[in-house]
Amino acid sequence: MQTASLLLTTYDNLLGSLDGWLAKAAEHADGDALLTRRLVEDMFPLARQIRFACNLPGEAMAAVAGAGFSSSDIDDETLSAARERVGATRALVAGWRKTPFGADDAPVEFSLANGMTFDLDTQSYVRDWALPQFYFHLMSAYAILRSAGVPLGKADYVGFMFQYLRRPPAD
Image (cartoon, rainbow, N blue to C red):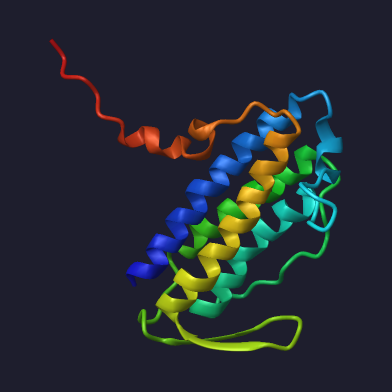
């Protein structure tokens, strides 16, 4: 299934970026206190954004492949613990590469805590829910760190792209 491969590669790449951001955050003067920072009062703090970004890959895999997964409801209290969570999530993503997936048009049903239930096919679920939700929480974490003065830039966001950098021909 092409959609699942895209999903897993995206999760791995961007969780790797998140780990790099957290490594830089650990060097920041505010350190672990950054986990309580918010962009605005009615948004979740950094710790919750990280938790959600790490829960979403498992929730997506449970929806599209029936993989077992239980979302965490505990926020990390240290940047070190948050990095461990990211690493554990990346390990889960790597393990799911061997998971048999159904077709892109296989039905997916998912429900939100407020009682709303959605019926989609796998491709629509990945495109319209799984990836947008992941990006939202990932970019909220990025924005919180940037607003706190952690020195992040575009290269930190897409650092995985450097593997594709064209090298000049050797003389």
